[in-house]
Length: 193
Image 1 (spheres, rainbow, N blue to C red):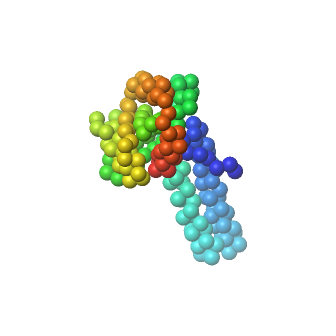
Image 2 (image 1 turned 120 degrees about the horizontal axis):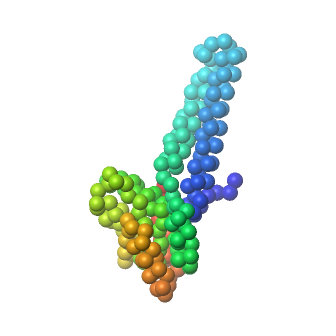
Image 3 (image 1 turned 90 degrees about the horizontal axis):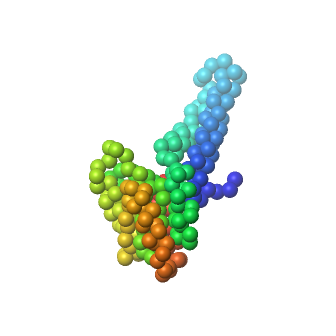
């Protein structure tokens, strides 16, 4: 199977499908072992039951991972359609989920990197406070500075129109160093779910 690349448009959809199939397989193997042991011995007190119980550990881990992929949606088709004509040669990623140690988890359907400037569109829940974007921005700035990018500026928008306007502005800027832009994008993908 071809590995999935984080930050692509269909990452969450494909990862959800793969993880569901993998979870079903991992749950079926211990179940088959348990049934085989029960049929052969007539009781559940046998060695295959023990092996089946141990086989449930990776199956449960896979089930938790599958649930995590069902919680987040990535970039929706409407935003993807609006961005497809706007991005051009910008370094960008779709559907990133950032987990901060003290502020929670934030879904960013789209993020763009150019000239030490990172801007993204954040999907914040109604329960989150009004400073969620500032907390996420501070988290990303902290990670970037830890990795040697001291001049980076981060802005996470909570409105699509403002984000699209900023993407258009970044597209018009002349590129300084595309290698740094791509390295920053890769770092963002590495720290996301």
